[in-house]
Length: 307
Image (cartoon, rainbow, N blue to C red):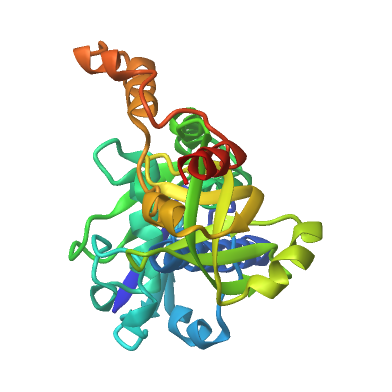
């Protein structure tokens, strides 16, 4: 599938572009494609890419065109049709066999630039990668157009548009204290991350401090309870949980907390609406009701008192 990267009003003019800028495009286009794929597969983009997936992210340069006002790179990328689908974590994610690495790049820029697009396709590390494009542009007239020759929606942006992406940080819900139960399915020491598989067969990214890994090692493949701060995407879905403490699983607590906390809380939804200028509804009367701010220790003690 062919895609065009068109540099409009390119700074160098005369139909040419400096090699450092070509290197910039190659590096960051690939980085965005990789991070976007990781979000679709794992829900969080700041994890190491499995080596088996590298071949699926290949993007090829087919040809170049130019005149005095622009330079066009025509790229070729294959569909993700051979990615093992059992890796996918989200049933509502777009079918991977209908996407390519370049399609993910276009989808990501559209999600960042247009209010009508799904903000859950983004997270903080991916937003940071998009913001690096501020350094590509040499003046305000330059633009980049990413397109698939009208077979999918294109996206065009300038340095000013990239700067506006910084506003996305304000739309990210504030972290929320949470407790989640599940089986330790993967441990990534180099990335300080644990994958917790919940009772509803969802996987949750748990970010763990290095000194905490020593205590977690013996629980690989076992069920535990984790208490920490849930961090969200701009669209409200869970991005990852920063672990504060953990404990062995109690059967009662496992039933209570074995679901993935994948959405904003009611308080966060209303706070986000207020930031966007919307009026609060009568539902805010629910504030203060259970579950509240009880710690994991408090919950364990409450259960013991019931026995």
